[in-house]
Amino acid sequence: MIFWEITQDTVHEMSLLRAVDQTLKAGDCDVITFYKDGDRDGFGDLTKPFQACSAPKGYVSNRDDRDDSDPNIH
Image (cartoon, rainbow, N blue to C red; front, side):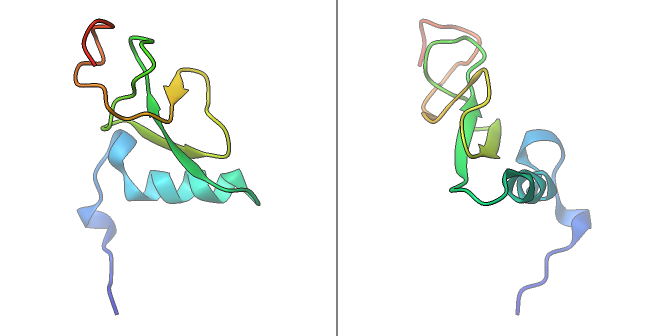
């Protein structure tokens, strides 16, 4: 059996508790991970995930952005 301690959780976007909360709030649907697309180039930031049934505004399913502050780099 694996035990997870809240003291080991990270903060902000990468928090396990945040991911669990988002999944529970999504309800009865297929939960997908989306990624924040700060520069709106269609490529999301791997370090800023969000779990939901459909993409919230400003999020995409692609997580391949290398620099989410520059739309010319992805």
